Length: 129
Image (cartoon, rainbow, N blue to C red):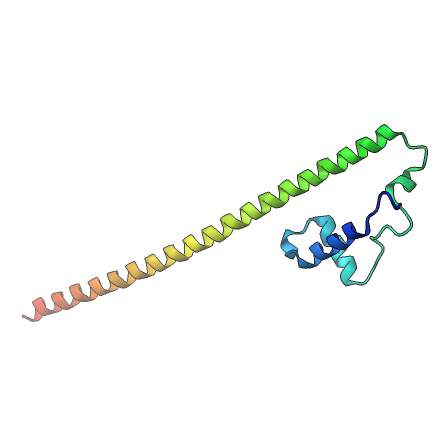
């Protein structure tokens, strides 16, 4: 256990979960955060680890495959997080563009109202004159 688990990795993970925006957390991170908020420690591997659960007779190649699978998953999670951040950036940009378009439409409608008033006043003057 002392070779597979490092206290500072867990401390860094807890700090990350506490500080990260909830909308950017993965499903597993959200699960752990919910457990922390409800003061449950069932997510924490107290007295157990993958090596113990797999048994001492585990083949080294099986462990390497597991580690590679975990690395691949970590890469996929990282890519998903980057994609999520990119989509969030697009959303922010679109909202700014929609706001700008809304302001332009409002200004155009105001000008149109002014033109209609001038035309209406001009028509009334011609009819009266």
